[in-house]
Amino acid sequence: MGRCQYKSDVQARKIGKIGEKLANPYLTKKYNDEKNGVEIRWLNEKTESNAAYDLALFKGKVIHHYFEVKVTGIPDKYFFSMTPNEIHLAAKRRHLYNVVFIKVNTDLSADVYEIESPLSKGSGLQAIFRAKVDPSLLSWP
Image 1 (tube, one colour):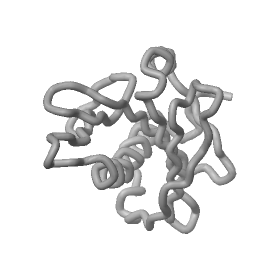
Image 2 (image 1 turned 135 degrees about the horizontal axis):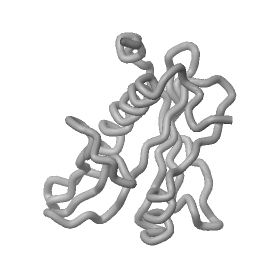
Image 3 (image 1 turned 30 degrees about the vertical axis):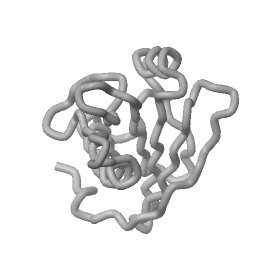
Image 4 (image 1 turned 180 degrees about the vertical axis):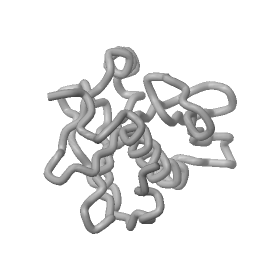
């Protein structure tokens, strides 16, 4: 089985961007704290950063937590792969690294799960929310 089950790497990147677009407002609402100078920043909003995470929780200029977003639109797919860099950072930062797994369903709803410390024995899936996906986000070039 290949790394990408989509028709092309372009489509895989686009569905990844959709996942980040869905994760960003949720994480922002959950973690931002203006009073204490804490905010979520989306690293790939304008260009791909190629970092081992997609969003981060900052206090000032210091990163306090890392979030990697994984997404699928494939029915009955409840798994994802991680790059060596993602695994390395997840191991190094253990309790400061979460994976946000988004499953876009055929009815264009999305199930979002947050996996805390994915490499720890106690990690588990926790349902976050269900949202309706704007169909225009799913159109391929």
